[in-house]
Image (cartoon, rainbow, N blue to C red):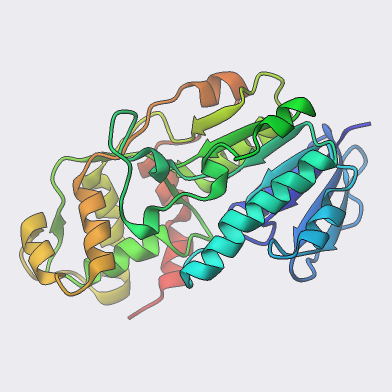
Length: 317
């Protein structure tokens, strides 16, 4: 009999990929999906794959979380509130995650895997923590205030933390970059910074691997491709999509200082501009060594696989 796995955020960008992977692994005996609305998933798959069920619930409803966690061995937490007001973000990402972890621990879950964000670690292992509100970590990125309880019950908490995630279904990272570039009169000269990125499918494999591998270590994992991406490659991908959407650029290149002056009235754009201009890369080979997962292609090849989806999503201007 395989493990009983609960996945949150199954209708989302990353959670949907984790769900698809879990539904085809023989190590999962039963997959339960926590969702706020009905999901169209098969109750049973081909022989040797787990049964799948959907339970209705909300991270702001502790009773629904207790019901969802009953009898599970592993929790993979991918749900979060992105954007919106700060009160909702706190209720979902902080208080909701706290209630979910408590429910899983009380139910006897032996492992809890929470998708985090590398932004809680600043620009890298020796960098100061970020100060912009958009980079505030979820509870899943920090030790739980009642962390001893999981240890007493045999639970382990693993927090895979990517920096930038791209791929089909990404409505935030690359589209946001394209909007930023479109607000400038010419291509951006971003300097020489390097950045950690991960393909969404590779990230999903890591999350499932963290839930199933006996070698997973408790605590945070930086989940990024081993090869940091030069900012020029990232900007070139954005410019390619912008050209498809709005036609070729005609203005001269704009450096960071010029771009900062042009975007002075847009604090959020300035935040992303400053991020692009500064190294944000994280080296952590434990992700691939401990979990036995393939990091997938480097960014240039990986992005090419998803470029058509981005073109369709962004559409013409």
